[in-house]
Amino acid sequence: MKAAVYRRTGDPSVLEVVDQPVPEPGPGEVLVRVAVSGINPTDWKARQGDGSGAPPKGGWQIPNQDGAGVIEAVGTGVDAKLLGERVWIWEAAWQRPWGTAAEYTLVPVRQVVRLGAASFDLGASLGIPFLTAHRCLTVGETMPNRLDVGALTGRTVLVQGGAGAVGNAAIQLARWADATVVATVSSAEKAQLAVAAGASYVINYRDEDVVAEIRKIAPDGVDAIVEVAAARNAEIDRQVIGSTGAVACYADDDGAPLTLPVRPMMISNVRWQGVLVYTLPAVAKAQAVEDVAAGAAAGVLRVGTDAGLPLHYYPLADIAEAHAAVQNSAVGKVLVVTSEQ
Image (cartoon, rainbow, N blue to C red):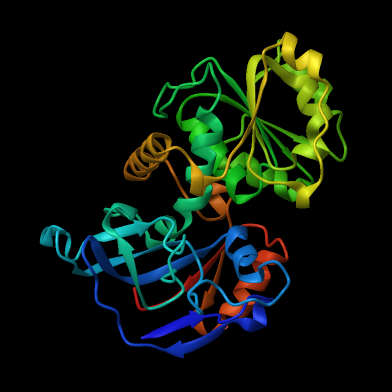
């Protein structure tokens, strides 16, 4: 099989496409013929490493956490009825060498989810962004643990960075659950993407007073904030979060420190919550997987320009260029076509 691998961390040039034997699934594992592999910022950051050029654990790594394809073999203890199932994959490369940037990958059976008739493109786009967004929308003390139709009725959600992959996922999930969704963007083009995703209101933070506009929509403040740049947006978030609300921070502004005024947060019982999908509590992770799968099965989760998430395709041979595109902040979703669909 063809597989993209890196044997030392570094820039995209460390990636190479090699021939490897098709692996056999062990106990509790499935072998998936990958049709499409999705790339997220976490994938290039893992590949880049700490700058030392150190090899990945185990000496080699196939990158990319997300993907979609067909189960072709099962290990002991796995129901053979899964053979031939179309599935989406989450966290394939987390603490394992078998990422999705290959014609085949090995995955623990609990990390594959039936895709049904939905497209492989959608399946390869679900894992990291939608599971992260689900946690951001449910982590608040007064927010529900689960998302489905009506779960967020009467609530207002602010999505900072509504044109990003997690921002897009948060808009789609929140609108499915009937929330009023306010999204911030940096351009007219990105505003169109946020509207396509389903945002109720879109604010261009370069041209408009974000706090003033949000207070028009939610005079008592918003119930939840899905935050991509906590340090940069801290003052805005402080002014627009409502009583007992939660600010869910899923990115770190390249390590910039976060400063908050303690007393106003105390008085309003506001929560600032870090979110990293890999280390979510087991129950929260399971609930997110179930809800995202339900949304995909219902046809309410979408990808493509019409859903506010343009798709950019690369062949496996161009894996380095695909990783560079994500690292250079491509707008939309970068997908690697790994085998015939």
